[in-house]
Image (cartoon, rainbow, N blue to C red; front, side, top):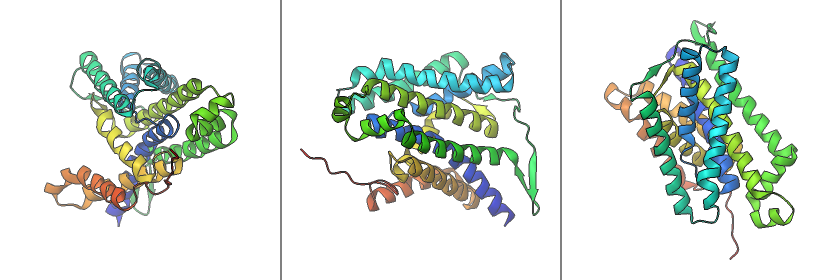
Length: 295
């Protein structure tokens, strides 16, 4: 039972990080109708910004967190303006190829600047552990899960209750009609990228606090898994991104914890196998809905 609970908590931690990244995927796809495959690499850039701020600049921890989020949000804004905005009326395949190109560009810049060796963080969040029934649970686990829940609820309220959020909903439904109603489409999409990239910055902080490492490929696998989580939960749905991230994180942790040693490396494959089954049985995901487009 102790092993099961510890494995479950690890899965919830990892799933919470996936969920935060998946929220960015879902927001961008739901509003701009594009898949930003460079989103995972924003996490990598945020983690490196955190690493430099802590280990080299030795800035106060609150300042490093704020700087990480600001750099991530700024990167998302710049990428959207330079790479995606000129392709607003391009074909989906052109946008997809551009997103993949941006992803490789960010990875190679990180390789040139920091090298390929993995960087190790010094512990920057010393929160201790909580013992419950003989099980020691790191407090950072509660911080990660709690942060994910707070952000998900806050994001839902932002979209439902604010003028900008309602504009996002309108753009996601019909860009032409939203523009006729006086909504600035470009501004709304830019705000969406900024919010999604800021969430990636928060995910970078939580990931770094838990796993204490970063390399140029950190965001690549995390981004793919988060994309799988967004599709699993129903891409475009905020609760779906959260549920999808949690389920994939827990399933991955369970397969890693309970499979024989020679099969643990295949845990990533099992997670994607579940995604394939979901796409076959319910292509729209758990919370997704079918849309009939009139021609």
